[in-house]
Length: 47
Ligand SMILES: [Ca+2]
Ligand SMILES: [Ca+2]
Image 1 (cartoon, rainbow, N blue to C red):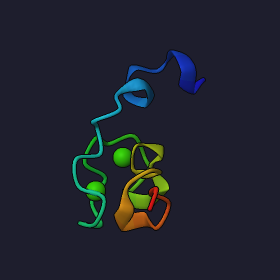
Image 2 (cartoon, rainbow, N blue to C red; image 1 turned 180 degrees about the vertical axis):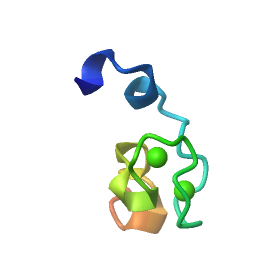
Image 3 (cartoon, protein in one colour; image 1 turned 90 degrees about the horizontal axis):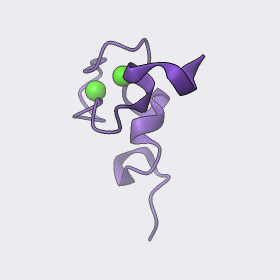
Image 4 (cartoon, rainbow, N blue to C red; image 1 turned 60 degrees about the vertical axis):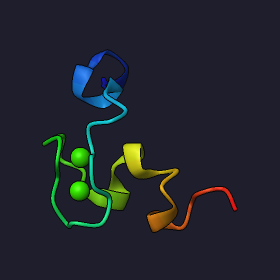
């Protein structure tokens, strides 16, 4: 469960949302990682 997984709770885990690397090793790379959800690079950021 992601809620109790420290890797999931680490907001700054994915340090670069555009390098095609799973920086925090949680199995989700760049824009697939929720840590990048609000990153402008993923097109989900606020204007
Ligand atoms: Ca990355
Ligand atoms: Ca990741």
